[in-house]
Image 1: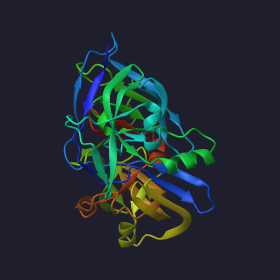
Image 2: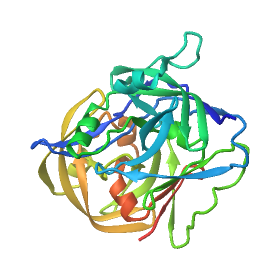
Image 3: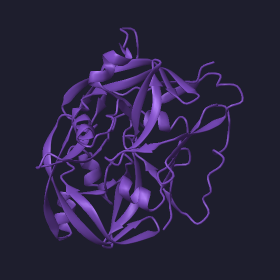
Length: 338
């Protein structure tokens, strides 16, 4: 019995597949993962799922880097994968490709053999089997990236390094529901089943619509001290981050830190902190929220940074956890509760 066969047709990616904040002292702060393709969204076809299984709920772990992690299997071998709503493509650590036995994209395949990421090129590898609980994804493409920064941070924190990332190319077709507080990922196993995943109680939550961009990212309407804006919903971001230029334009005071950040094919950048008097996410009002401030040029497309309203940052995992965030990829809805 087999599960879903996902195919993405992506020629370039303009983003960082890993942004890791590191203190000057050598201690690591939490990392994040994002990616954005430039063109079409994934196309997928399903085959017969395991008998009588329509949906499944999988337990997640939270790392000291503030990542939500899933125990999976790649080509039959145990793997630890980060769950990242901000990554349109799933990824594998480049130093784990050989360990898991991933293969190159075939010469006759319609899939790209490489993706352009922030001016550099990264190879695409094929996992013959990516098993998420009862769901077995066949011939799953994964971009091979350098996760060395995340691995070094994990070593400093005495925890297991991640082997790769589960991105939107899997979360959307399976109509995933990600409960960031309860740390549960619910996936649709049978693609022919209609309706929402059972078992999630939304009573008392505020419903916030999410908007899907051409780059296959999710955004929510927000406000920063009364100014309309949008934020990317990014469960892979260790913290909520705002674009430095926007913060400067808003004349919001910042505080320097010893933290720097780096991404795939992106030079290291400094991280500051700011306290936002009023931060709104849909109809949810947050007061005096501390956020990170960083240069997001190249990590968020310039046309989105300059849009009306502009995308001004990333809605990260600390707010998603604190306010009981539930990300419903099937309905493109974010649920929050005080």
